[in-house]
Length: 439
Image 1: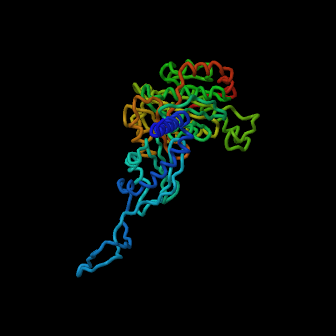
Image 2 (image 1 turned 90 degrees about the vertical axis):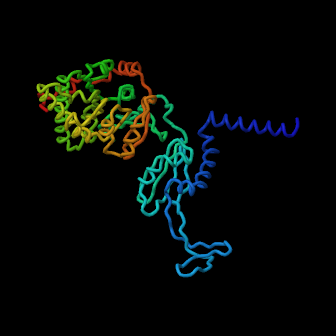
Image 3 (image 1 turned 135 degrees about the vertical axis):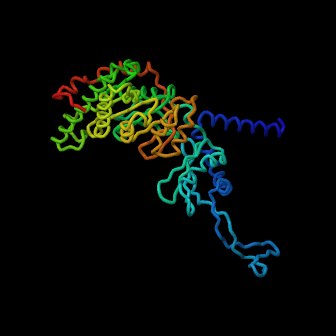
């Protein structure tokens, strides 16, 4: 074999080996080879990238020039100088990049007059300059900005739903950072979940039912579509309301249950049910509401009093329910201010926000508008071809793109039937209530 042919054979073998390594075990390939080369490239190109993205500042520097015959003007006479003050573009100081599962992150020291918003506005330009999928900007202390770059979209394909070992905690999908997307009712008690038809809103509810079904909790459903959404899961539900009249009665029971638990905690000198001894601790209740807007829509004035009762009772549960083990997960296709002040007040109590693809800007604004304008802009770009993708307000105060695992109706029905024996009877839960409580 000739020497050139042998060299080509070795080169081809190396290329095929690198391709196989990257294809079959991307994580180790990225950490061992991909990230070091990327880090060198990012550091080497930072001055040019910062200048192109408008993140530099003009500063006066003493500059020594070797240019023969350099001339500087004082305004009156021209003198020859080799050491003079000139204006130069100063870039923000960049720490060493660190690897992440799907990319890298780096911390910058901002220049005078800069705020994190300046970097957020330049995030898309930064992503194109470095050739990455996206760049997210965050700040954990004044004068510091963290850039998190993802090399490829981690939400294109997500894994299957893992089991949920902790009480009232369900892993429903994956965040854009590669970390699991967890709905933790103990940390964030009330959630608002919006999305148009086929956006993944109902799939997320299925994931919650599958995750909560094997846990010792009571599930309560409000299904104003006549029960077509939650009736297949009735075996695991302790109570289900399918009309507004039934919703009024069920909400009255929830308010009464909450007041009863207040008395129990007061007698035991406990601030919440989790401080009670396990022997007397009541069962947690997770309330699933589908088509929230139907609870507030009024066809004629005869429904005004009924809607007022419903709105007041639901708001009371949202305001006081956390301490007494009652949690809300409210879903809706459209939520607007035209539904009345009750919806706006309820939204203020729901610190967990999930916005899938929506058909009207107001629903996105009602869900995310009071959190971060950038989150609102990202929600409006969710494509119809990516069901399950949503903008999520996390417990750490940040917002993320996320995608829920696909959970079919058949899987949710199977979970409901399998764990039907764990569903506490609603009559037993409310048996000690002396009489219905008016909202």
